[in-house]
Image 1 (cartoon, rainbow, N blue to C red):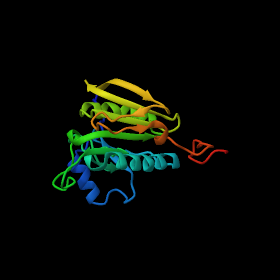
Image 2 (cartoon, rainbow, N blue to C red):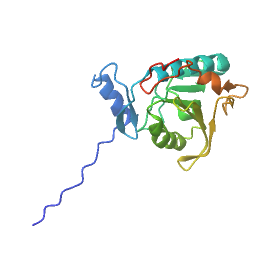
Image 3 (cartoon, rainbow, N blue to C red):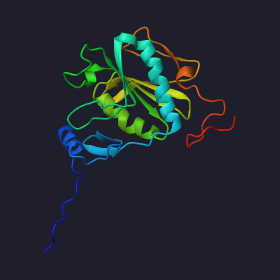
Image 4 (tube, rainbow, N blue to C red):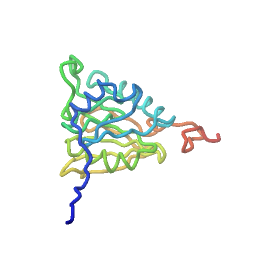
Length: 204
């Protein structure tokens, strides 16, 4: 008699279960993980080009956005009951209590940015469809190595219908933040020698 063997399937966690696991101390304090479609995903290590670019972009956005929004850095963005990624930067709608009354939703996100050094393929193939499904209107991928910014807009059917690439010499104008303009050259400024793949300064 044949004995059927059922196919194994990964357990999918909810955001509530994910938080209970965190509160129970199942992750080290410095763990870099996020919940994507019910799976707990290890995030890429932060190298020098990544953190320098995040810091620079944060400063530029804080100065440009002012009181019109809240610039949130590497904090959770709850998309639904099974996904809570931690984008490098989100600009949320301004709110008097700064969301103390409850976490922001995708409708509160004016701009979502991922800075990609080693995570470029993941940010394109996994994060972009996830953000599109959640209705994020303006998603940028800052491609550190190629010195470009990919701008994704018009979410429909789980994908972005409008995708363009901005390069040094171009201006970045957030869709939902009229009057804000960031030169790509300022976002991607680096040392004269550049960086190697390990994030170390190259020869000057």
